[in-house]
Image (spheres, each protein chain N blue to C red):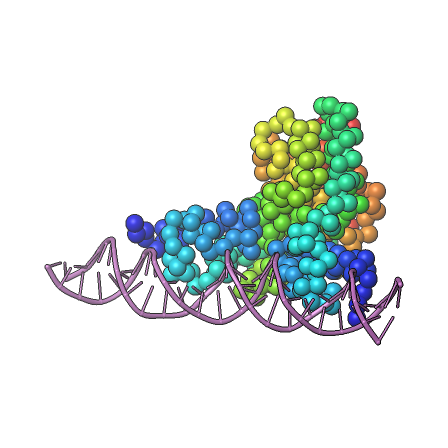
Length: 182
Length: 182
DNA sequence: GTCAGAACTGTCCGATCGGTCAGCTAAGGT
DNA sequence: ACCTTAGCTGACCGATCGGACAGTTCTGAC
C-alpha cells in the first residue's frame, strides 16, 4: 500500500509521539516507529531526514507557542514578568500535554539540543524573568516544566476539572518559586 | 592503583548514582561510569555482575523503606490506608531524592523490572490502597511518585522550608487523588 | 500504453552498546 | 623467595542502533 506523503508524515508523527511519550526518545528505535506505522525503517528516513527531524517537528508547535510567550514577556519586568512566565508555562503545558511529556522523558538531553532553538531561546528568557534567587534558575525552570508535565500526565485520567488543576498548578508554582503575586 | 573492594564498590555506586540521576539509566553507559570512577569498563563488571546489579543496589534502600511502608499499610484500610500511603510516599521521596530521581528518569522501564521486587511489590499494595476511582491507578501512583521526585529535584535549591514543602505536597497529592482526608 | 517521478524497501555499513575472557600485576601469608 | 589470590585490564564478541543507498513498485498525467 502506498500512502500519500502528507498522510504518511502524519501517521509517522502520530506513532512517534505516542512512543516517545511512553518510552522516551532514546527508548524508541526507528524500527519501533516503523513497526507501529506499518512500514519499513527506510521509509521513515524517506519522509524525514533523520530521527531528530521527527522529534523537532513534533515539538515545533510548542516552540512556536513558547516563542510567542517570549515576545509577551519582553514588554514586562520584575514580578509581572515572573507571573506571566509561570502562567504561560502552565497554559502551554495544558495545551501540549503529550509534547511536554516527551520533553520531560529525556530532559537532560533536550536542553542540549541545538536543533530546538525556539524552545531553548525562550528558556533563556524565562530564566531572566524568574531570576533573582539562589541556585541555578535554569534547573528550576526546567524542573517546573517537568513538574507540570508529569502532573498533567499523572492526572490525565483524574476527574479533577481542568480549571481547578490549572489554578492549583499556577498557585503552587508561584508559591514554590518564592514569589507572592496575587 | 588498587583500591579495596569496598572502597571500589562505593566509588562505583557514587558515580553511577550521579550519572543515573542526571542523564538516566539508559543514557549512562558502562564506559561513562568507568571514566567517572577512573577505571576500566571491565573492572565495573568485576565488582558487579552486570549493569542492572548497580541499579538494583542503588535502589535497595528505597525498596527496604517502601517494604516497611507496605507492612504499615497492611493493618489499615480505606481512607486511612490512602492517607498513610501518600504520606509515606512523600516521606520516602524526601529521604531519597536522588534515588527517586533515578526511578523517575526511566519510569516506564522501571515498572517492568523484575529485579526490583521490593519496589514493585509495594506499588501493588499502594494501588490497592489508592484504588476505587476510574482510570489506571498504577499510572496514577507512579505519576505522583514522579511528580514528587521532580518537584523535589526542581525545588532542591529553593529557600522554601522542607516542612512547608512536605505539607503542600501531601495536601496537593491527597486533593488530586480525590480523597478528602484532613 | 508509456513514462517520469513519488513512494517504498532490502541490504549493507560503522558506531556503540552490554558483557566475556584470558591474562597481567601487586599485595600478603608462609 | 615463593605462591596464592584479589584487583584489574585490553581485546574481543554478538546484538542493536541510526543511517546510506541502489534498486523496485506504484501512480497519475499524457
